[in-house]
Structure formats: structure tokens, C-alpha cells
Image (cartoon, rainbow, N blue to C red):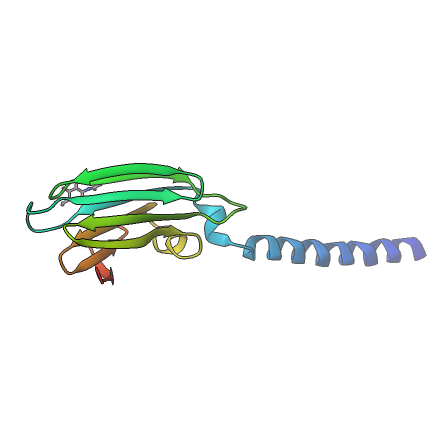
Length: 145
Ligand SMILES: *[C@@H]1O[C@H](CO)[C@@H](O)[C@H](O)[C@H]1NC(C)=O
């Protein structure tokens, strides 16, 4: 009789600990646990071919090389998001005399904004850099200057 009370007591303690452990594990970074693969698209959205868009993208581990994009061309890359480390990709964009470095994928930012589709689209236009996660609705994120 006495034993079974103790067993119930420990069982309840166990349940409380287990429940809290689970809750904290899944609250840790929900979006990173859910989606692992992402694709980033860089698009030349300029309205003329007077100057091409020249891009050079990097991460802490990778140099994705220099690419020349003419009107409507895109450069894309895919990667597995690090679950235990932060992921960061950035691109140096040049067009004529203009030059700008922008972050195209950061853990905690694009992991959330691109999660639904698994795609991040960046369109470089005369007026600045536009972001979309579906290649349809665009929001301006950065200026050239
Ligand atoms: C994005 O949209 C453009 C214009 O509608 C289309 O040409 C292109 O193929 C699309 N790209 C992707 C990856 O869906």
C-alpha cells in the first residue's frame, strides 16, 4: 500500500519532468526543426540589359563563385539548414558602378519568412532589392545605397 503511493508519486514527478523537457526541446527553435532544406534564388529584375547584375555569394563555409546575370536570369542554390549552427549566406551585388552586400539567408530571419515554401527569392531592381517567398508577392527590403 505504502509502496504504491510512492510509485504513483514518482510517476507523477516523472511525468512533470518529461513534459517540461519535451516542451523546452520543441520550443528551442521550432522552425529550424521543421524545415531543413531551403533554396535561395537571386534574380536580375532590372528593366534593361544596359549593365548585367554581377553577384558573388558566400557563406561561412562556401564561396559560390561569381555569376553574371542578364535581365530575368536567376542564380539559385540549395542547402541544408544547420540545425545546431547558425546559417548565414550573403551576396555581393554589382551593377554598373553600384555595389551592395546583402544578407540573403540568416537563421532566425529567412528560416521564418521562407519556411512556408522553402524558397527565398531576391530580385535586384533599379529601386532596390525585393524579397518574396513565392515568386509572386514582392516586398522591398534594401536600397542600393
Ligand atoms: C518566377 O516567376 C517568373 C515570372 O513569372 C518565371 O519566369 C520563373 O520561372 C519563376 N521561377 C520559379 C523558380 O518559379
